[in-house]
Length: 502
Image (spheres, rainbow, N blue to C red):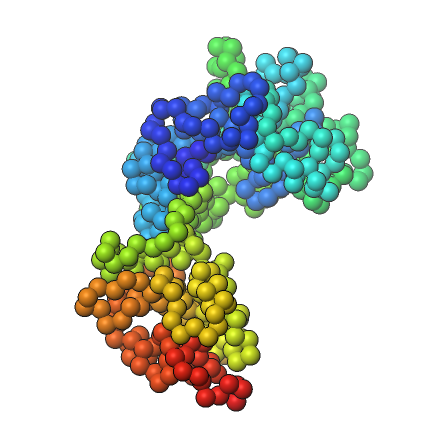
């Protein structure tokens, strides 16, 4: 959805026109005002994978496409809290207001020439956008008849085949979950009676070698996904469908061609959900894991961009992006507490430290892997260094002062006594940041101690425990001594006496 824009640009307000998020499709011919742009959904359909992986192919060997909607209360909540910014989500309690609604829709491409079939669907003119069309078209699991239809940007008449609706009611903080499908998706007594070939089941193509509900990578030769419903629709749902479809037919409504598959709601009062509810699956969205599919059971695990924080049952929040900025704020701009939070967000999201390198000293120390540590850092540690600092060090290995802005981060692992030294849980990050100090600072290094996702426990230029070790060791240069869990310091002001690693 265009709500989560690149470079963390602020989205336009509700009901306002949104700029195109896909310049690659600027020359595409046809309608692009599609799929309810007023609900702040991108005027494109750009997803092909189901939530648990795997593409779905219809009877015409076309990919099924997906999109997500968000209603105004939910949109306003995200906008006002700036949760389109991944850094704003970090440490925040996400709790959508009552009345919030999220929808997920699945669409199949219709044959414009088959007007009789198209009249049975809720349709839209859709700009179908597949960013990785080239990669997908080269997938050896995709048959030729499917591959030749894949394009980055193309305009199609699409028909709605599946719809999830999730609604947060005043009496249920865990939302109410319901899912609908088109009547013609699968083979039923009604489709057989009317002589309709279902969208995702063609009996004439079934052979002894056909596998049902099979992912493409397991059945690379299939040109359509042969789907059956593995969880029977409950009788009370069937009765409700008959009742309301009859009324809709009298009104000649297109929605008479759709049916409810089931409804779920949690019985607990917490915002955790109840995972032991019966299975509920939409054949177009949970095709390949129907017998293990539960709306609430899956969304209970939904996280924000911070994987330790629940996102109130919405996986959408994880789509937020992090801002890209080259430098961290200096002390003139932030108080120590705020700088500590900025630094943690910087190494976790803006410039993820997991992508950094480390010191290249492989003669004395194996910094490229976890190694044995000592208190106060734990039994196992691992060190990362920001890219600019590494470049400066590699250009001048004999340097005794690191550049301003240098960041050295240490992962601290808790290792149970009965476990190998290199295994364990990451419990803490200790970070050294060479910033501009204030006049009363005891060092030019800023020290941070924090669990990986906060809250920050220490953020100070005057952290006594850190300074007493890092800055007062004989021969130490710029606070970089590796101490007893390293055979040789990385940076020293004078030549280290043991250059042979003895």
